[in-house]
Amino acid sequence: MTDNAGNGTTAAAACAATAATGTRARLARMLRRVARAAAVVSVVAAVSAAGACSSPIGLPVGGGVQAFSSVEQQTQRVYTNPEGPAADDQPEGIVEGFFNAMPAGVQSDGYRVARQFLTSQASEQWKGDLSAIIYDGTPNFTRKATAQTGSPEASGGIVVEVELNVVGRLDSHGLYTPEPSNGSATVLTYAMAQSGGQWRISRLPDGVAVSSADFEQVFRQVSVYQLDAAGKHLVPDVRWLSWRNWRTQAVREVLDGGSAWLGDAVRDVNTTKTALAVDSVPVTDGKPHVQLTGEFLRLDQESRVALVHLIRLTLGDGVSSAQVQVSVDGGDYSTIDSGFDLDNEQPNVGLYTLTDGRVVSLGSSSPLRVGETDGYPDARGFAFSQDGGAVLRADGVVECLKADASSCGVMFSGARPSFISGGLDGEIWAVSDGGHSLYVSRGGVERHLSVGWLGAESIRAVTVSPEGARLALALDDGVVMVGVSRDDNLAPAGLSDQSTEISRQRDVTMMTFYNDLNLIYIVGAESQDSTASGAASATRQRGYRQIAPGPASDQRLPDSTVVSLASGQIALYRRLAVLDDLGVVRSVSGSLDGSWSIADSQVTALGAQ
Image (cartoon, rainbow, N blue to C red):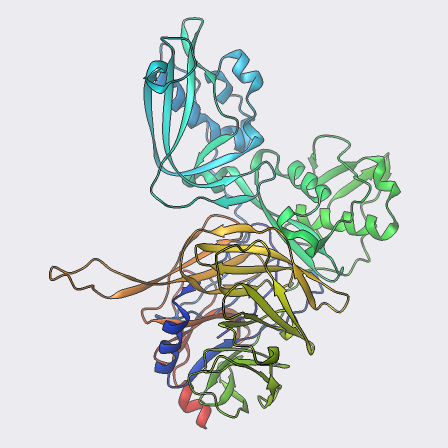
């Protein structure tokens, strides 16, 4: 089964994502048990009029069905009000107080309280906004003499070591990277000194440390919008910026262009290096005021319009009608993008299953037979849209399907890929047999794409973002995203020469974009604790969802075994859907924490009607 993703845009949409796991062989065995049923999802992507929230859908591989709904940008935050140092506090207490004060520094007070725990020199040198580490659990504070640590400090000095379970990091641009969960702790060292008879921190690492519980209270998820290379679609470049001054940071990031990992997938419209004229984006009567330098006037009119529109979407969480004031040298350019018609709208996404040689549409509460194929027993993969699709046959060959489900020939010159997935406007992506390259077909044009940075790892599964500029790859040791460059006909021409890590979860074999921001993936069945007799107990799958890139959270799966995952539209609602090993299609809409419901319980019988 394959899926295509819906597109929508809200900078803080909290939706969901799941990942599927299992080896190709295991998947094939599961699919055989589905009584010749393979579930498929297709996306008919169209990016046009303005939209504010994305809602993707996918097909899970097992378990009961739930209904999910999008969650809007979080606006209710808990503001912390930390206290400064207590008189005669010991070194451990000073460092612990500093840790308690750092979240407020990111969120609201600009480190006013946190700097009270530092010596004056350390306060001047410390750069809190340079980076961030996100940790889980409770830090462990331990005082040590420098002689114990081998520190070059003068004999008799004191340091406090803080042991943390780090789960992720942010760089200076707000790009999130997960940390491996290998059980090893990270240790930060804080040198202590007496100042006015009181202990203070005299030397410390730049950046902040924030608990995972505080993360979304102090950092705001922002989609920094970019224009794709063809100028046809908008691309959300996800960042996590401090609530204290997120608008200022967000405009800077728009002006700087897309993240390096996107490569040629996005276009740099700020070729004159326009910058903020004032290091602030104040808000008056709910309207942000962006003041730009004169370099803006050197841009051509098309680039000026695009740049103002990208700023508007970024500050407005994807809403093209968001109010913003843009001025340059006293001139008002706030409305020059009024005729710009490239906005985000959730596209219609079709959901289909392949059963006993028939293609069935699940687009409404009454599933419909679309067409009859030549029959593909034990099909290993399927992707379909209103314009046709492809099936990964049991022999490993990909066969093209027309809109009426009849065959249109063998694809990729008879190569035998290990996985297929749908993409933008019905294109078909495939993973080569060895997992070290990709095939893609669009509009009759087929290409073989290399992945130069891959190394010894192999690709297990792929899924394409709704706008087609980002590709998620499930590798042996985790999930990464890369940029997809396209030619003038929008056919994929290559992948970026860098990637960004999304997850360190191993054995991911199923993925789907629930919308333009959220990725859902499933990890393979794991053996539970052995019984007293030594026999392994039942196995299970685990699903995850995350704004990508960003922290992951658990995605509840049905109770049965999921063999395919996709996202699509059923009865006018966006849904995450799964095909289980009994041939039942289940879906959830609305909150991704909702209940799974049956979308199609008689896949094989329906195909025969």
